Image (cartoon, rainbow, N blue to C red; front, side, top):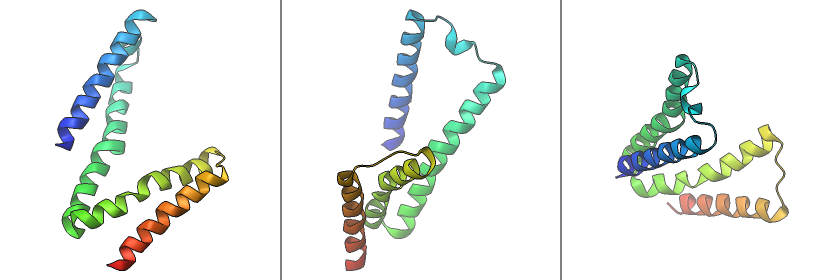
Length: 112
C-alpha cells in the first residue's frame, strides 16, 4: 500500500513540476546534463527507497508495533540534525516537544 502511495505522490510532484515549468521557464526540467538525471535517481534511491526497505525488514524482525514506536524517533532525529548541521534554532516549546516524544517512546519500550 505504501508503494502505491509513494508512487502516486511522485507522479503528482512530477506533474506539478511540469506545470510550474511551463508557466515560468519552459524546458527547465530538461535543461540539465544527462548525468544529472542519474544523480537524481541515486539521490531518490538512497533517501527514499533504501530506507523504506530497511524499515520493512526491521518491522519484519522486531514486529510492527515495536517498529512503529521506534519509527516515531525519525522526526525528532531530523530536528536534531537540523540543529547540529544547519544551525537551526529551536524554541523551548520545541525542545519540550522533542523531549516528550523521546520520553514517551522510552516509556513504551521500557514497558515491554
